[in-house]
Image (tube, rainbow, N blue to C red; front, side):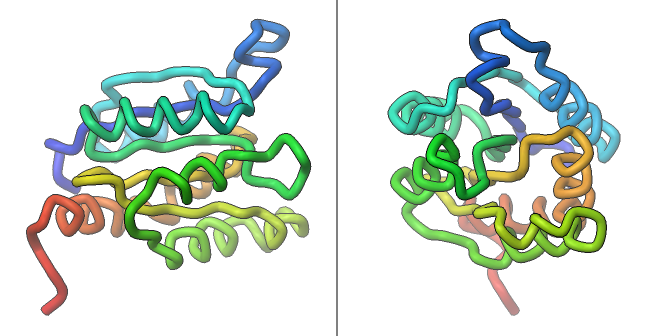
Length: 161
């Protein structure tokens, strides 16, 4: 995988954002990303708030090649991450959500209900994935083989041949 990919990891959790609980997902996901040779330039925690998430996506997509948002992809009323991603991205990448769901479906029956998704904003790839540490790590493992290609294509290089 190309090591010049700038990655931002955002944990989406109202309780972690207020300090009510420790963020364990962000560090776990960042560790998984680093284990594949990429540098995580920024780690943040954000509440389940569509406007806040949209602002973060706008900001981080301007300075990073890959923005990973872990949490808020369920079907509950506070699960707003996919809505923010879809509102902010110019083009959606449906296959990434399919891969994320498939990565955990055997172990987590409710994985089929996840609204994991991905899209591009400018030259950045933005991914919404589940928020539990294990599921986020599984999602990263499942997409790590092709995510550099997605970033390369979003940058305008390496098109399909």
